[in-house]
Length: 611
Image (tube, rainbow, N blue to C red; front, side):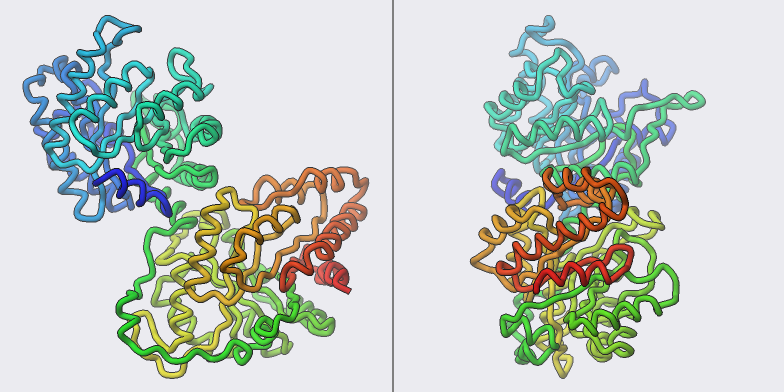
């Protein structure tokens, strides 16, 4: 793999590495006084089994079982003469388990002795030892190198130099830090990141020694210091001794939550170190898929082009919402969350009030925050049939495979549901049943492609379905995303895939919204802005700190903080929302207001600001 190929692969995706090998050997009864690297020769079937388990769990790259396969460490176990064979076989076993789609990283760790200026070993000798190991891994045809768990710059410099003398493969330099984010001798992030940049590695990061919490804290500093791809491979917490065995207590779900946080700050390479297992990597895979799904839509471009597409139904003829969007009219909608039980009467009554007040559509979220609620699809059908107001159905990729999505799309069109908001969906672990399986066959971009194909009369396999569906395709948009460039790039992909309009997450920062809209002028479609009437200071704090992509400016926080009662806080929240509506109404094509506590009166109070 060339450096360019490596960096290109990271541009629009997150690369998931495997978990611990030592932990897995230990779980198979191989004690820590053994030379784990030598198992490449004496227990190759076990080494390959562990590699394969991580591939099955969803790893994009697996590391060779050669972390300690250098001359110094092997000599302690009497295997110095087998150095080349151990490293070569380590690469060979990983390659066999990886198959054609998974990368293999040559793992090189510290020598286990101090080098100058902190110890007796000359730098030149250390470099020679690292070069010996790197050459054997290169001969085994690794795709890249990962230099990991280094605690001093003097040692990793020699490892970097050695690898570069052997080949031109990509190099990830991963340091091991204390809880304060500094290296063993107190070297601060500003110093070690600057040094790694000067040595021209291809990615920098942290692994081992601490758990995800402290890794995240340090990486929040590092992301401000470098433009290089950043890696995070924490331990599964700190080890504990339980009945004579060393156990890492951090759960897969906890690690997966930190994966989302790593991605939010811009981390591109994620994996696990000591204590992580197949279960951890599988949970981390699902967490990544909930944000940046691994798979792409299965409909092939070249196949679509060989089949004549039907002309889609004109946008104004698909729905009343489509007509207003096509004619440039301002649209209004209110979001009502489905009930937790099977009784829809309250939602139906609220929908009648919205219709009476000339609201254009009712937004129905699909299992928001992965909580179990009445089916958004069935509730949308009930509202349209019994109330006569159009709905905008949120439809997530989380719960259904491609076949189920295709069936839903064909059926929903047949019963008259025409307005969709296609979103990837929150991962199940956020909700009532964290062990539920997330599907994520495609993400919202892939689903947009699929529905657009149906609007052109073609199914997943580019087979004609007869009459085209008539969907008005909406997509999500986050103007306050942590990684604005990625959000813009994904939005452009959604527009190219066939989106007709977009609905933003709740917006509190008007200046931020305007700045974002300026950046998407060249591929802008009608934008409907989400507005959330705050009901209390606690609600404002929750939105600001716990809802990804939502930012509540200090000025608004202060206004909510100044309220003296629940009633005053609610009224101030509505006042803030009304002020926002008046500020943005001329810059967007619609407003979606959430109904606090399901009470549409408050949403109507906000929409009254349009008059």
